[in-house]
Image (tube, rainbow, N blue to C red):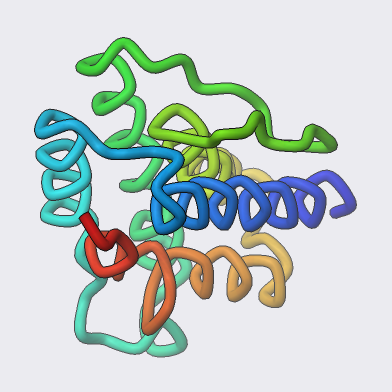
Length: 149
């Protein structure tokens, strides 16, 4: 459980670094980076059903889709995904750091989904924290709105 909490904490730190550096003009997104952000936003839209009303498989699949979308985006752009656990984000932060933050949480969903049948669902509070990072106001779901360029 500590590993999951560390991963979520690191994801928030890397996420904030990328958004902050963009807003302060240290990272100016290229047209390709804008397209990638738009594509990620298009394929990871949260459903209208509140997560508490979804079965565990549905909740975890919503989180996991971020992992696969970000992995594909990183490959398309040649960005290397790195661990966010216990590591300060490089500054200025940019697309690789933003994608690494998103992937850290999406990969949790993938792992939880794979282990669901054998281990049962993850602790509800941790799943809710992952969902809060990805879905809703002020979350990764609003990714496009955080950039001023």
